[in-house]
Image 1 (cartoon, each protein chain N blue to C red):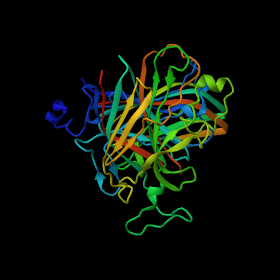
Image 2: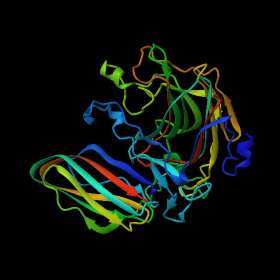
Image 3: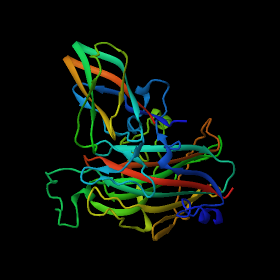
Image 4: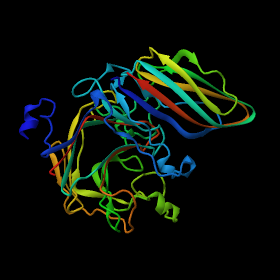
Length: 302
Length: 111
């Protein structure tokens, strides 16, 4: 902590004792890459939801009305962008392994937006009133998640996933944090006949998400699609208990220790000590959705 | 050492009509090279054309001025671009009767 306070760029974070990564996107993407599903060299084998996760971008947050917005510091942030197609999802992943069990913390300064649209407001949509802007309803959700596998034994693998749902599948405002109650359908599960809607990498069906108690939160969309305000986020999880510990987003801290994290019954080969960190953005409208990260710190107590 | 990044802009995608690629931010880069790997091209007189487009904001676009030579058979094709500002995309035309193309499109950026 003393180190963090002494460094002007780190002083806006609260890292655990060992910093595994400090990803300031002013100098590159730092290993955050496009997620691709499993295949045998033939890309036709990719399960549909994994075929088009989009490459991350180094963004200047440039908009048609005011030019470049920039980031918290410097010019660039990492941007994930969906296609302008309902339920499309853009996913970035950083692939590590763990040297010990214990706490891992992901911190970020982030913001989110729906792309500017012109004219032709959605029928029945709440109109612009000088404060509220219908663009806010064009944003679906963003999700932070991990992919952990301790070894090759059954139940060694699990994903914790925390989603900020701005609008639900019907495009209605919900503005709350969710956790998932269904398994991520792996390529092997699908090859064995597992039924999946294939429009969300996390779950097979949309009802496999549940609200986090105390997780209602309105973020700072800031009225129009061309103003961005950066938010602080801190997610702590524990490799020892195979559970989330807590999630802090600005002034809201959610205790997650009693939130269940599902494990896979079967064993997985070749991914021992897997420690993947992932983030995604998913649109619930036919408008591009963007998730921006100014900077990320990943730290551990081991 | 200069930064570089390769983005897969289209991955094993199949098209039956004209299309534009998704906007990609590239303000940090001073040079770019597009690659189009045409894996399948079918249809009577099938031909793929691609023009480079630029934009100040990722929304409104115009031609940059350079274009791929028309592609009428599978293969790898490439085109270098400089002085492109902050955004790049390709505006692609697919001509021919019942034309169909399956391809990969890469954007290789360097500081």
